[in-house]
Amino acid sequence: MNTFRNPILPGFYPDPSVCRVDEDYYMVTSTFEYFPGVPIFHSKDLVNWRQLGHVLSRPSQLDLDGLLPSKGIWAPTIRYHEGTFYVITTMVGNDKSQRNFYVTASDPEGEWSEPVWLEDAPGIDPSLFFDEDGKVYYTGNRVPPEGQIHAKNMDIWLQELDLASGKLIGDKYSLWQGALKVAHAQEGPHLYKIGSYYYLLIAEGGTGRTHAVTIARSESVAGPYEGCRSNPILTHRHLGREAEIVNVGHAELIETQNGEWWMVCLASRPYGGNYRNLGRETFLVPVRWESGWPVVAPGIGKIELIMNRPNLPEHRWPSLPACDHFDTLELEDHWNFIRTPREEFWSLKERPGYLRLRLKPESITKPENPSFVGRRQQHISFASCTVMEFNPRSEQESAGLVLLQNMDYQFRFIYGIWEGNKEIRLVRRCGGEETTLASHSLNTSKLYLKVEAYQQNYRFFYREQEGPWVTLCENVLGTILSTDMAGGFTGAYIGMYASSEGKKSDNAADFDWFEYIALTE
Figure 1 (cartoon, rainbow, N blue to C red):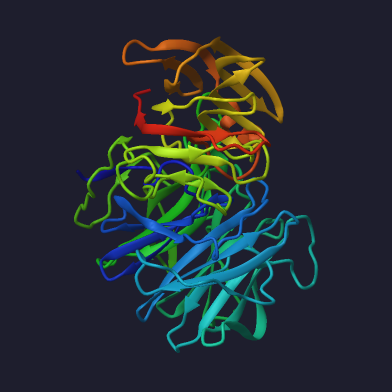
Figure 2 (figure 1 turned 30 degrees about the horizontal axis):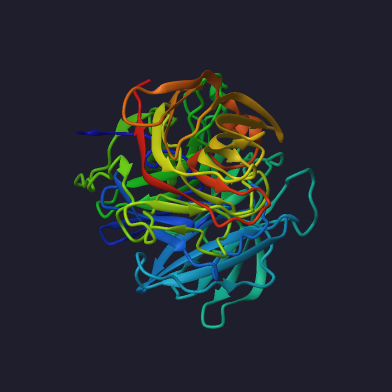
């Protein structure tokens, strides 16, 4: 096939950064409050990607305790230099503090180092640039030294980094403040040396519907930088709210071994009334150079869902099974926790062939580390089901499935005890207010649960044994799972959950398998 389908990473995979090592490509994305942090992907053709693991896979690397939704890890950058991979990123705290650090590895699929925290490195979205003279530079954003002329007016700055000491050295240089004086949220900078020029690629306009990609160049790494007269070189903000792809921005340029240029960037696919349940996804778009400047999507000027593929041999990876039978000793890479787990509340060993979730006092409605194992929603329409063995013993104990945007916007499809009766319930939590949409008395130790979503129309089913599904609730509007209602920067998750809601418990829920499949819209 001569075409490919966007997005290349569907679902919540924002702020992509990519590097090439000979004929191999490696990409990382943001993860915010989810653990492990920063998934790393590998590709041979820029279209087909397989996950190698996570960069931040140990609690010692990633302290997410108590973080509010959409805090945590923002906008990593990956680079390779002389046998070493580098990933640099920002940790954002509840108090809006911003701390930048990097980790290294000789093998991107192996163990990454402990963080090297950088002092006096203000702002977010750090990037590294290895110059031809051997010097290494840090770029990021900050409040302009002369002060802001309007809200969110930011300055892109540069400073040399001494890798031997892990410290920034020398002077800080202001490089650029975007394409227009009224530009705001200048962020996501990446530096490249192409020919005789240094090119500075940044994002502007905030990560919402006015997002855009702009570029400037200079003959000196420290500037002055001249903006491209065609800026923004990529945006969809002029296409309106009805566009099939929106909020395009936060990009990275990459040259193939064949001399072609491409760009990865984030964008969203709204549906069901312009809601973005999937969050910000990773897209691929061609680039051509004209008169010393990049032209993105030549002749089209926008990203399309179907585009001509790179001039690289197609390399498909073995497809992942739709159903996880939990037959391995470790969780597969697509599973995540919320915040850093400080204890192993899950087990694949205690009952082989099952995922055991121990009930924890922590709740998925608070900024805690609940007993939750989830994966990203990656399709506009999907079906997900599981079978659970669980016997609740008190009114605090419940377990089942959760469809999650954040701690205040979610659906909990759970089995437990209420007012002395065992029931299966569908609870909607919207803005922190909870409503029981449906319930049914049930006394069982084994329960099958299924969710189907056709765009924003959700249906919930259950059964006690193999056979026909029983409808618990249908025609449920799923828009609370979108960032447009919930706010923040993440996408929707679906996963397994068990809680004793503030009480200690030695109970557990065992999940035999979990299936997720795409549905035709």
